[in-house]
Length: 154
Image 1 (cartoon, rainbow, N blue to C red):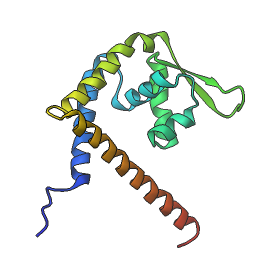
Image 2: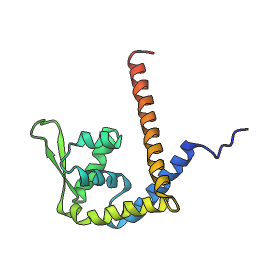
Image 3: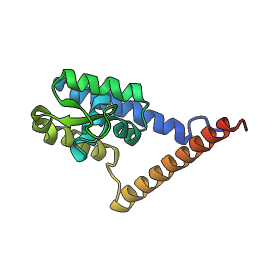
Image 4: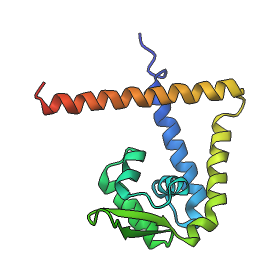
């Protein structure tokens, strides 16, 4: 009989839920949710990138990305500006408010990483990242093939 408690997907799902709970709790005082947090994190490294690129980077659909950016605009953390080279697209820029909380946001992320990797050696941390990255690549290959097959009626 198969052990239903031993599944990569199950553990990833549990970690995701705990991560959302942690982020929502830590970010509540800034009126930022976990969805907006990930967009801020991207912008801290790539301020001014286009909205579609943010969605691709986070592997989110366009409506989820737009909703989270709209919330960040309302809270005064980002600005949406029409892209001068493509008038149909928007570039997203951090405001002074977002820059001001950057150290706190990054500290929250580091703390969660420390919580997850408590008791891990440097090698175990590195191996975990490599394995998780490979899992993401495998999932992406699967869905790319699925979309291709659907397009060609296979």
